[in-house]
Image (cartoon, rainbow, N blue to C red; front, side, top):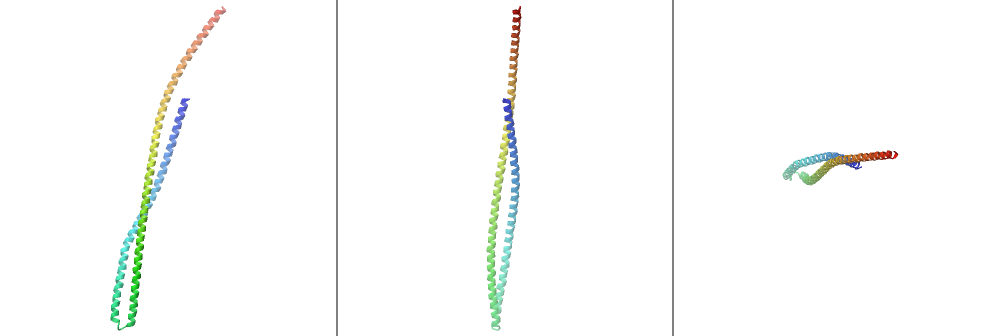
Length: 225
């Protein structure tokens, strides 16, 4: 009975170890799948950050050129206005209607210059806002990537700890199995000794019984005589 119970305990322990090993392998496969998914996400984030940086750099490169073109346009307009003023001074006495038209053109040019300046200022503000939003988006993406990296490292540490625990449990079960095996061998030896002693006692009892039967038979024969 003790041997059966010990064997059953050993079998249950080994089954439990196999189940824990399968669980550890399944967790490891899940961790690998999660790692691949997170790696893909990080690749997409890095690609998005790269595109954002390129767009920011492109905008930064285009802004000075746009400002330079606007400055050149304003300079040309200013030169044109000065030339018109000079021409007006020359022709003031000769062509009053032309002067009036030139003054109107001058006023229109001034207004157009003001509108261009306003649009330039508005574009500058919008560009600054876009750059700020891009910087914020870039910071948010960087924070997300860092958080994913921290989670990945935590998952890897947990998986490693689980595998370490499983390895330690397996070693403990192997040691327990060896101890149980040794105990079973000792019990087997003790049982064989007990069986030998019982066999000897039974042999002695049979010898005594045979002697008693023989003595009884001899006494009966003497009584008949």
